[in-house]
Length: 296
Ligand SMILES: [Zn+2]
Image 1 (cartoon, rainbow, N blue to C red):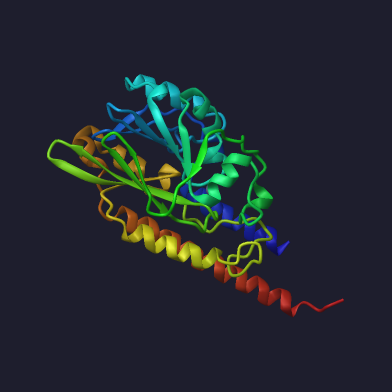
Image 2: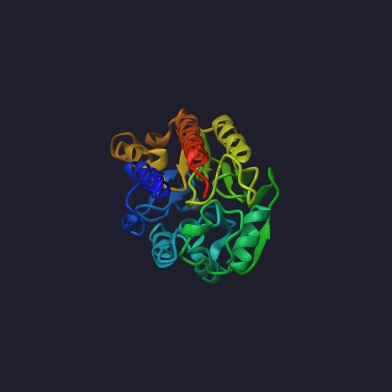
């Protein structure tokens, strides 16, 4: 009972910042972020297209209902889905990777992810060490044409160069991606940051779980990694977690410069650090209570 209360409180904490799950697939007109980078995701799940005359790179495929909308967004911007050379993934949960199998089929692209995430995408089987194993009920369609990238590897298409930064902890295979986009005289450091949320099912312990013993250490390191990235424009896998919509509201007045916020990565990382601390404190409190209960 205690556990379910904790879980409800954790979920309420998340929902306070996030749209409800029902809005994840909501309509969202595509829009320019900066230079050759565009938001093509849904109202609640990010997908970013980086374009070049030699081909495009797409980051994340949102949920299983999203591929038709994402493809429509890409076409509405004047680009061809068939010109996507690579699809990159932040982490292999259904809300960011559920649409990738269909988008891969439409485009013929190669799908790139960290070594751990590539395994999940290729097989469609959630890792036994996934902190949300017990609550991931939406199956992930197995993805064709996958390849693992190394930490720090640069993915290139024509003039495009997107760097992989392993950011495990929310999952074992989490990856954030960085590149540069130029508009007028300004070159912006772009960051697509993976989820850094300590969020688990009722049985998983971030403070030490044999199924993923490094969860806490990984997440702490990933939070530090994202905080230290050169970061002018942040897009997070869940767009509202990086305040994308507040910045977009200023776009009509300020143009695409409205998306520049050089504190954004540090703010995002700090929120993740505070949440991890709260989750660890709650786990410790629960463990203390359990120890006091009389044994039978
Ligand atoms: Zn997730």
